[in-house]
Length: 149
Image 1 (cartoon, rainbow, N blue to C red):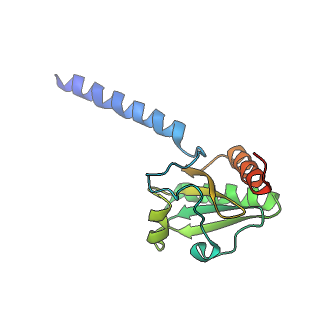
Image 2 (cartoon, helix red, strand yellow):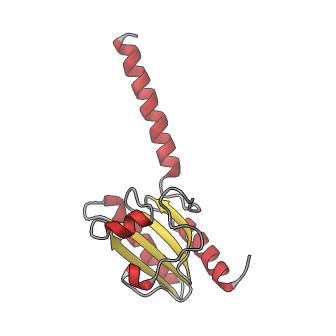
Image 3 (cartoon, one colour):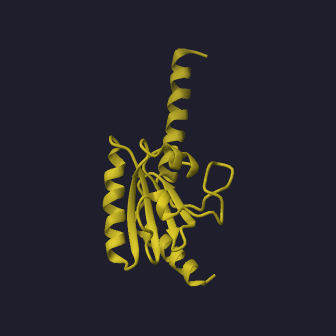
């Protein structure tokens, strides 16, 4: 393979990876066991998080000091928490809470967890989530807490 062929293959691979990453970045999805996620039914408590859970739902954000997308996530989650009564936003420094970050399956920041009123993970995102997605995930968490299917 010539140098031009190698360069073309590298550019194609990088483009495909970039498009794949852009599509998944910030998308709120259900957690999967076996990837370090908090298993279904297991809860994160107020003591573990270092703050009280919201009466209806909690938005947990794992951040690091030099994370640029963390600022956008902080703004979005703060706005949504202010819009919905009984919802709180908790930001955790992943570097200082490595035990909790590992348990929650955090591999990059920001990582966002949407918890129901009991502290169970309903949805998660790696990357800054979009505001409509956060609102939809909150609806699911609040419905789950209310006993709706």
